[in-house]
Image (cartoon, rainbow, N blue to C red; front, side, top):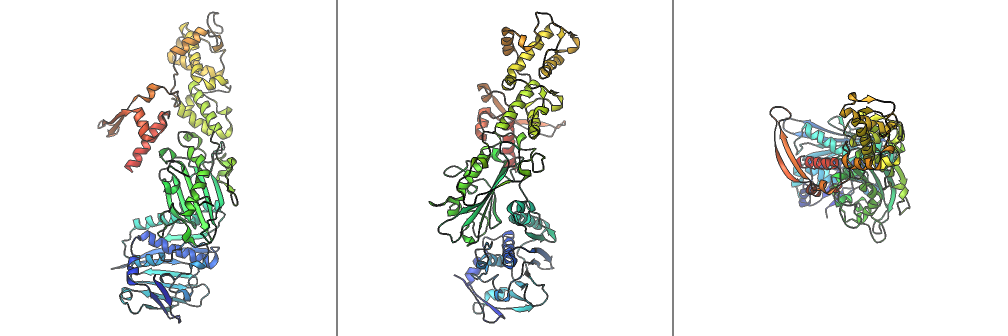
Length: 620
């Protein structure tokens, strides 16, 4: 084990690691991970100094010279006392155990980073209460001397109080605008909980942190674009302060889970994000690390129809952060950690995920059409809970109540879908009869179900009877038979029809030539004036001769549909004269559904969307 020693005088710092140990530090570190590790140290210094109640700045900049590139990382987090001068480089020597909730918990992260980024480097710092700062420099020659490993510590006057600077004098990596942009993106994701005002509001924190790279501020990843439908409990929720009291750990670990359905499918964002000590460790997890897969305490396999599911897991402790399920690089999760899998005496993260997330997982694209999520973003006037996740305090609790989960029966979704299907079949629109919070969902679903634009449907005020909602095709056929009887006699007489019936009657007449008909006030006795006057024979004939004249995405399944052929073509050259194409796949609907792992009764739209998403995922 490498050890650190500081001389009794404040003029020298002595480090006694082995040469092999320091060489090994260069492995498995990237430019981004090294810089993030040093930023972790800055955030810990900020916590040590003021418990993160003051504002602080982290600046990362590069100065290009003729023969070398200097990287500077500067923070205003409070500075490092002179007696801790070697803390940033002395292996095993750290002040982090003095900081409850520290991020940089492994004791070697900053040392790895400094060695990896480049030599020589020098560190300058001035504690906020000190009259003068200090500095020391590490060089290649220092590494080559196996006898004397003391480092002179000098006074530094030109540094403001509370500031620390790390200067990598000759950066080992190439630097470009693309490098800076990529680093800003990585920082925005890693420190999202520190930078995002939206996330801080739901967490009850108020950090004032600004991070810049080459003078440009880092933008946080922000709050997921969750949907907040005002029905069926489908809005996002947060379960916070869940207590994980594992016997072998010195302190309780607090778990927070925030879950919801995104307004749209998003392959770049869906899945599980996991934070430890407010620092993102892994994002967009869709495997067993994120709680998916099969077996005990698993949600099920994540597939394209779950690309609206977004879960955020946060683990925090005032104890030793090494107990948390992250690796030394803070880039992956140990799913076998007792906190994740649980023990005989304590439920683990995966068990809590199953109980809080399962209902959302089950609300996939097959069960909840996009119409019921897409319009209900945080700024929608009817958004549930004001467009914010509903927070439930689970401190001291061990069970999740049904009231804190979506209604998996989704009665409103089913009702509005059924109304949209029947209205599309009847060629009508009746948004005035729909609850205000459901109007947007109804309108989008109606356009999906219908083969014509919504503005071309007939606006009606009367409510179709229950039989028309449950059996719209049968009722549509009866109206069609009535219109056909009138047409055969050359008359037009919708006077005794409700406005919801007249829509389909008029559509039939317009398609067949209404202008050639006589408009009459009364019909002869042998002609029916309404559906009620159709004879039993007429209705039987309507059922056999007239199919639904409008396509709906939810028509009843039959064996012929599942066994029908499916062909996929590739077309090049656009719509012009150069257009050329060829059939690239010749299969059946049944086989395609099997390969895409979707329900056999899925609508054509779901099939097309799943196939399109699968192709996009493959090509991208």
